[in-house]
Image 1: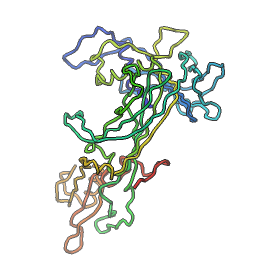
Image 2 (image 1 turned 120 degrees about the horizontal axis):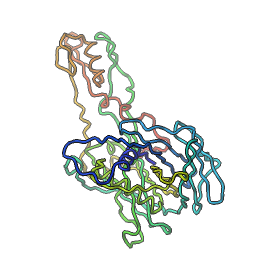
Image 3 (image 1 turned 90 degrees about the horizontal axis):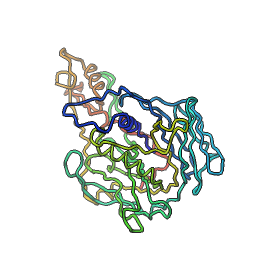
Image 4 (image 1 turned 90 degrees about the vertical axis):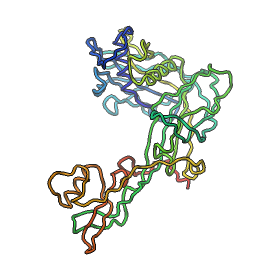
Length: 409
């Protein structure tokens, strides 16, 4: 699951500020005189044969500060039969289960127990409900007005699913991967103006990029009387705004069952997102959490202990399939610079420069040397540069192909 540390901090500010604040015309940064550091818990267990994680931290007075990680805590999950499972600290503030000894089961109830050494916390018991499978995952051509106010065309991902038999609330997350190729190959390496060596096999030409959903997608089965979720929109990809659809795209969707209290919690988070992160837009908020301090009932705890079965579906989309929809293509914006020391170029100093100085200045400015043009006598006449992301895919991606990846064409 995604981490929402910034949003937890924002919720902390909301809890500390009163709900009677009026709007301010001038910019205003609240001074938190009575700031109280709150425990933040992010934990999820599923029926997957996998390691489960629990992250513990504390809020800070400023969104710019790094949250304090809670180390040395004892983290345990206990089921309704009295069995307990200890989590070990893998990284500071990150605790993990042992997948060989603990796998959660549908129908069981689980409680999260945390002992920081100074305080102890526990969750409400949460029953793991069955979740139906995702029947189909597919796409279609669509349009959407984005934040720039312009109507863009692209792909919209949809899914069909049965509604849950027990429980009426579902949550969806997704993970994206896509293959990219740089528009320009690096054809030469520059040593000095008299030594420019051909590159026989250019490196970092093909990479993969990854993205996790950062939006909150929840639905209540109570909102309509149908027995299925049909053609539910998941996300929109503007074809001319990102490189996702240039070669091959992959998306994996996970579907979770959630309790009513968690649904209300996620809806609260959606409201904060919709307000653009402005705590004065929507006041007051009521915080929902299933965690508390049994020794200090009035202490506020941020986060949620989520227990759910999970079902998933995935789909590849190839460039040929995208082309069949006649969508506008993404433009990398790779301007080519043909330069000599006498030309104007980014960060040019006032005094004359040599070829090597030109090369180093452009390198520091985020450009890559890819080629050169000779003069009539064969000496260097111009150097050719592009922005680094236009000739080195590792600037934005990973050159290692994911284990699951299959090239469809």
